[in-house]
Image (tube, rainbow, N blue to C red; front, side, top):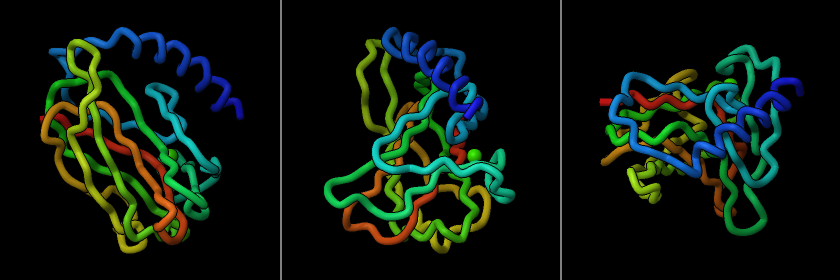
Amino acid sequence: MKKLSFLLSVCLLFSLSMFHPSADAACGGVTVIDNDSLTDSNGYSGSWVYQSGQGSSFNSDHRYLASPPASGFVYYGWYTTPCENKARIGVYIWNANFTNTSADYRGFNRDSSGSLYRSFSGVLNQRYAAGGWNYIGESTKGISQLELLVFKEHKGGTGADAIKFTYQ
Ligand SMILES: [Ca+2]
């Protein structure tokens, strides 16, 4: 829980900067954002349970949604500084309980005026995904946010672990 407490402090600082976003001309390289990140930020709706001591997971932890919501959808999100560069997108998952065959990922970015726009959508079959990093596609424009949506029609458990933007 110490990790979560620290995360709240980081989120507060980060949320302040999110309200005054600016396109970073120098952005690039590789950005990895874990679940419950200490350096970037996350958000979610629904009953995503924090599970630590997971030997196969990135940083030995992940979030787990045991079943889809009764109505509508829930999400888990990863957020970093706005970047106008396109990126290849990878997600790390490695747990037998992750069985959602249509995990629905959507990517977004904020432009220099702070407006949010969508730049990616991709689906991963978590049941048959490789253990470790899975490449799920490339954004059409800049990207700095990824959200994993789970709809009531989905089946099985869903995992949220680390994600990676490899900027072009
Ligand atoms: Ca993790």
